[in-house]
Image (cartoon, rainbow, N blue to C red; front, side, top):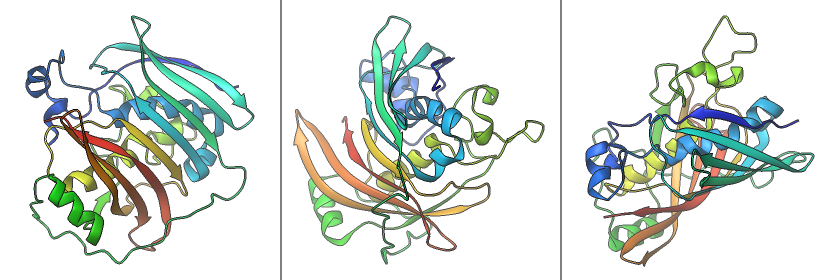
Amino acid sequence: MIQNFSGLAFNQAPDSQNQIHSDEMAKRYGFKGGLVPGVTLSAYLTQPAVSHWGQAFLDRGWAEIKILHPVYHGEPFDVMVRALEEEQFEAELVDATGKVCAKARVGLDQGEAAGKPKWLDQTLMPEGYVPPKATPETFAKLKQTGGLEARYRWSRQHPMAAYFADAAAMPALLRFDAAETGSSGWANTSFVLSCGNWVFAANALMNPWVHLETRHQNFSAIEEGAEVAVQMVVEDFFEKKGHQFADVRVNLFSAAGRAPHWRRSGSAPSIT
């Protein structure tokens, strides 16, 4: 049975380049403090899938996630799940007041995941590259020419290695704990989704901005020490209520063998 669980929210990124996760910047925009990253909330919503289906979810699971309200460091939350069918469930992340702050639909592909992404011959981002500001002109160029490919390495030293302050609250498959049976150190949802955010911000400079909505599909788990190649394509961009939005498609591949790990599509707005 897919289980509910409770936890304390953890802001992994108070010193992030995206300063909406810092107290100082977030308070300028009317928030109580630095926001817990949307990718971290996504990890909470998909944790029941990892606990229930194990590596099958890392190899062929999918999720549709929406962030509805901010969550702050140290706040208690509950993840409540409702099974829809044998290999699909809905989840809500509820704060201490009963407010639904994020929700998801999560499942497994019945067979081999369809629509695997194809490798694009994008230019590798040079070391020290300074991206242009996120303007309509920048997004128009990215839509026409494509982005620069970025590379990231998964390891136990990575800031996203744990999405709880106490890593023991994570499923064993996602922990680096040699004493724990089943501990495998596979990459978690917060790291994988962050790769999509990082490549976006590395191609179009935004500060601050928020992660609101994601649709993603896993194709293979990412093991410790693996380097991933991250490629993005801007599919649309627009302005709404004074904020810039971009719809992007991001694909993760093994940098060594070009096999696909993950595919994501979704929206991200700048809040400046």
